[in-house]
Image (cartoon, rainbow, N blue to C red):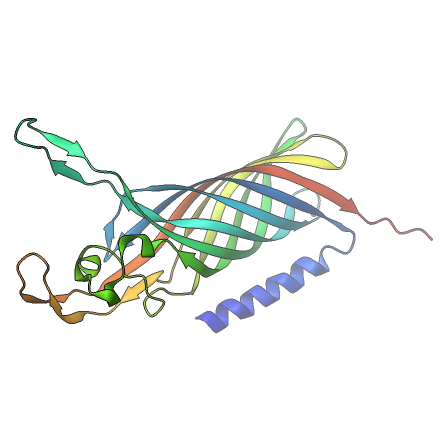
Amino acid sequence: MIKRLLFLLSILSFTINAHSQDGAYYGIKGGLTLGTQKWNNFDRQALAAYHIILSKESLPVQDRFSFFTQVGYHVKGSSIRARLLGNPFNAGFVSSPPRKFEFYNISLSLGAKQVIKNIGNNSAYYLFGIRGDFTVGTNLGEYGDFTVGNPSVAIFYPINSYDFIRRINYGLIVGGGLNFPVSEYVQGVLEFTVNPDFSLQYQQPPIPNVTNPFNGQSITIAERNIKNLTFEITVGARFLRKIEYID
């Protein structure tokens, strides 16, 4: 699957460069990421994070259709907001601090945009593309290290180990947005995208013969699989570089 994705990325990259001979839009944008994850197909709570993106887009054909490529830094993950039993003098429940599970990814996306409606000088569009991610780090080390005798880490949380963290992932980018003019060569961008992963961000096999820290018994920690899904709201600007040919 990875080889097929790289092949598609190469074809789309060549196509974008071929359509950029008369000029292109170069952009910078960023914003809010709402990250969610499935742990063994069970949803975790959302993680509020951020992203920043550099982009290149071919000039649209007949002001409608264009190709884009973009590379960005995206914080993905999820959180747990547990509720603990209050003390005997204060009946009820109290909220514990949220535990955030963050994965820091560099994403390369390639795809196409289609303008669906012009609203005055503004243009509304939808987009669709494929995406490849490379994980450069996580924050899992904040919760301890299973290798130094803290088995409760693996019972409740993912383990901070690159044996289990999948460095390369792939998925889709789907969404829409609005371009609005600022000047002749500058446009503002407002965009919303949904970014599902098809691959696993984390894959841990069962771990046998682990001592339960609560009763001292030997247990097997179950297999854990984690998959990403993010929702992103993005704002930014793109700058027109137009090539004119003079006889």
